Each structure stands twice: as structure tokens, then as C-alpha cells.
Image (cartoon, rainbow over all chains, first blue to last red; front, side, top):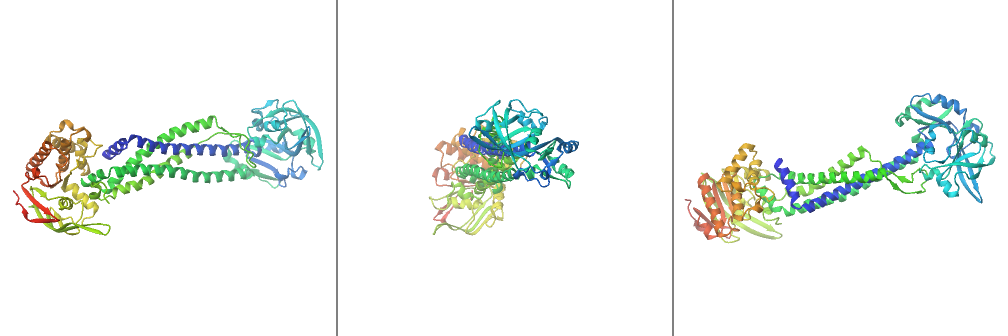
Length: 405
Length: 230
């Protein structure tokens, strides 16, 4: 075996440039796969994380008749005394944060322009609001603030307002009327999620309850868990006849399905890229077989069996593949590192149903790295079976004459 | 004792719709320790006969027996095993593996035969010594002259102590002095080892070294052209 390894290495060294370019092609293929996997994973994971932290939480407790699309404010559709219920839920060990939120639809009127909005009443003291505090320009809301609101950066840009400016909000109320009040923009938050930032206005829960005449009600209890894997268990514990409990999987079905679709699509892309790189390997080895036909004849003449000749070419392919994989891991690692740290700025892509960040940061998992490396190795070795078989099936007499017939 | 027995062997090659009869019924016996030349013009069937004796090819009809074993019907792997165990080859082109050193080229048949490390080293160095190439053990073929390469090829063919060494035009690519050295080496090794040498040639200077000459013409042994073994 040592002799086979030596021969394979030296054979690759005969045409160093060709071997290098073949390994490089394989390496670039693997590097691109790692980058693609990292970017798509980062994008999907980012979208899901944004949806969970900004919108759905890991769990929501709400009235059995609440319909998210209608943003109903009718009392029967809301959770009564949400503070009490939140305090009880907060005692469950897996729960990290629980906070009531009230949703209402409204319109912002600025000059002669008007923009449709989602008004969210929040408990300003809750740590669930951390994503809004990060990157906030201006001051955060105080619980007793009766005139202050926070708006998203994208909305601020859209209607050309900034911290300290005022805007008039028209808000639907629980009795079906519309109320109107001028508010001061205390701050502009930036979650880097244009789809969320362009239509969300935050105000203290008490003020939201007052302006919507929702009294001591909330649309939902927003719950974040210490560990996402505990979702099912906590949902089961919270299930009652009185309330509906929704998990992040149910609340983000579009994101989850999109992720599944993206994963399926990625597998097709993986196979296309690997098929191309495998072709390079096949081409290199087929050239090597034809160039070394006479040598194959000599080896056969001195008694080397076909299976050993085949093994010799497979070992050569193995070295080429391992070289390519090392190049791919180094190159791909650097590319993924760059994409993880700096990311790709894509701006507001206007996707509906998905909260996609304006900058995609790659996130490559160890399992994806191992899976893609193994896939590259397996496909390359399968591809090299053809040239190896070609070499092993050569008739010694024909091979000694340089491949006659 | 006969090492090779060829009985009424024919070999027909088919290329497209054209059939070419390279051998048309050859019978020949070669005894142990002979130093035999197969001679004849180009296309007479010398190389084809060597390939059949060497288990590189199979006859269209007839039988080839090596050391009492009929090799005409062996499968691919059985023929490879027979070559590895009993037959050494020397080719017109020097046929060394270019990526291996002289030492490693000679070592290759021993590796294939499963000879252990110490025995292998001793045998390779002994063979290199026989052909005065000990100092060139770690040279690759492109660092050796044609004559040196062919001497390495000869001892590689003898490495696994075969019963039979077959050489196809062993001096055709060598100048006269190197050709002389190669032939003298073959004669010396034939006498020293008792291995049977059969070589094909049409070079009169080489034929003169043979103790027995078999002349082929148009795929047949020419009448009266087999000189008795010495």
C-alpha cells in the first residue's frame, strides 16, 4: 500500500500544474458550497430569529377567538388582566420573558401624506424590548409617557421624520371608532429589518390601551424561553380552555416553509456544483490514464492485478480530492468568516411574510460543513471510478502498445 | 525439463471486418535454461508468440503450457498471477515506471509477490549489484542512460525468480556498445541463474548470442529453421 501511495503522489506530481488546477477547481467548488450554505442558513436563521424576537416570540398566549390578520380589539378577542396572567406564566422555570402586547391598526398622517401602520403597545420595562433599544436614536419610552412613540428607521426615512418631530396617529378603537392624537417621536429604532421597521409604531401599553379603549386588555402575551427546544413542553403546560397557545413554528409557518424550500433548493445547487467539479476530476484522471497507458501495460505485465491498478487510480483521485477539500475548507472558511463578520448588505428587498434583515450574515454550522465535505469526497470518489475502471480493464497487450484499439 | 510447450497455436486479430492471422499453427518446446532467439522479419509473429508464452494474450486456438500448466484458458487474474510468479518481461522500450527509482522499480514485483521488507531490500541490492548499478539505486529512469535503464529492466524481470524471462527486441533502442552490454548481461544471468531466456529480435548481432534460434515467417516456424538447443 505504501508503494501505491508513493506512486499516486508522484504521479500527481508529474503534471503539477494540472493536478493543482484540478484540486483548485474542487476546492473552489467546495468553498462556494460552504459560502452558499452559510449565507442561506444565515439568512433563514436571521429571518426566523427576527420573527421570533420582534414579532412572534417563542410562544404566544391569546384569546381563542383572536385573529391576527384582523387585529381585533373586541374584548372577547383579547386577554383580560394580562399582567396577572403574565406574572403566573413568568414563574415557569423555562420562561425567560413574558410581556403583554396590544396590537392595533392605524394610520400616520404627516402633512398631506398618510401611511398605514401597526401600533404595538409594549411594556417599556420588559427585556423583550431589547431589540428596539439596540440601535435606538433618541430616548426609550417611559411607562407613563402619554404622548411619546417610537418609530422604525425605515418609516422615519419614508415619511421624513426624526426624533423630536411630531406625527398624528389615527387609531382603531375597541368599539369600532377611530381616535386621533398627535404624538412626539421620542426615538427611532432600527432592528435592521426593513419589513418590520417600516410599518411599526411602539407606544406604552397603558397609552395603547387608553387610545384604543381596550382598558386592561392585551392582544397577546409575548413569551421568550430560555431554550427554544422547550417550546413544546411549555406550550403543553400553558394549554387551557380559556386561552389559545401558539408556538413560534405555528406563528412563522411562512418562514419555516421558506427555509425548507430553500434547503431543498440548496441540495439541487450542491449537486450541480459537485457535478461540475467531479467532471474536472474525471477529466484529469482520464487524461492521466491515456497518458500512462503503456505504464499500465507494464504493471499488468509484471503481474499487477486489475483491482490493484484500479486502487492505484482511486488512491490518486483520493489525494486529489483531499487536496481539493483542504483548499476548499481554507478558502471557504475565509469566505464564510468574511460573510459572517461583515455580511452582505441587501437593503429592503420588500419580502412579505418574512422579516429579512437588511444585511445577511452567514452562519455555517459544523454539521453543514461535515455534510458538504463528505458529499464532495463521496461524489469525487464515485466520479473517479470511471477512469479507474478504464485503466483496470485495459488489455495488457493493447496497453503495452499504447492503447491500440 | 520443458518450461514452455506451444501446441498448434493460432492467433487471429480482428480489426473491423478484417481478420489478420498473426500465428497460423505454431508448435514449439523450450527446455529449462535455454537461451533462445525468436527471429524473423517484421510481421512474422515473433512478438505475438512472446505475448502468448508470456500470458499477456490468449491463443485463438491451440494450447500454451508453462511449467506443465495450460495457460490458454486462464482468466485475467489467473494470467496476472502466472506472470507475477513465473514470468519476467523485458521490453523494447525500457518500460520502467518513470515515477519510481531504479530500486523501487526492481522492488515492485517483489511487493506484488508479498516478499517481506528485509528480504526485499537484500534482493533488490543484490540485483543492482549484479548489473553494477548499486550507486544508481535511487536514480529515477530519466537520470539513467538507455543501457542502464534496460539493465534495471532485466533485473526487475528476474526479481521474483521467474522460470522464464521474455525479452522483446531488448536492444532495439540501444546503440551498439549498450546493446552489447545488455546482451552480455542477459547471457551472464542465464548462466548464473539458470532462468530460461527467450528473446525476439531481427538484429543479426543479437542473434549471434543465442544458443538456439527459432525462425518465424508469416506466422509459422520456417521449415528447418529451428537450431537445436545448446
